[in-house]
Length: 232
Image (cartoon, rainbow, N blue to C red; front, side, top):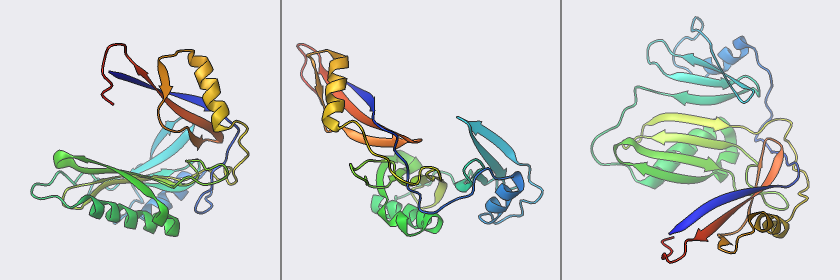
């Protein structure tokens, strides 16, 4: 049996590089204008629904006929995406995985521009539900780190229809990368010292990840239970 755990070692403050600048602290009317640009229905009289999480304010507008929900990040000033409850699981043969990726990449390009061409996708296929895709930009900077760019999440039904698309844009204040004070080797030494266990071993390479202005090394350690075969 293999027991896995991930330790996070704080490096130095790192910043994100957006595809394009965005306004911040939008009013409800400004958010409505953004949502309207992506809606096929009139949202003028639609109630604005405020959702706050971790200090981030998102305003949702639901189309009165279709029920499609549009989401706008009011704090950082960009269109987040939509959820379409009318798109349900389909029967019959499914489109191939690479076609699902192309559908989402095309949609991301419409919202993010040319940088969407560099998105790297992980794909999960879930029976009748279709595909769930998560797209991130490849590592960049010196040293290379994940998180410097937009992220995309989408659900594609087996027939190729999109039931949900959302995107996260880096914050405007995170425009330039900052130096990293702790190397991968130092991060591994710190984590190993904190564990102080001979039965733990590093699995894979340390990954430098930046989020919300901080850089952290993510290290996954595997512990092998005595007398049990490693099942991976």
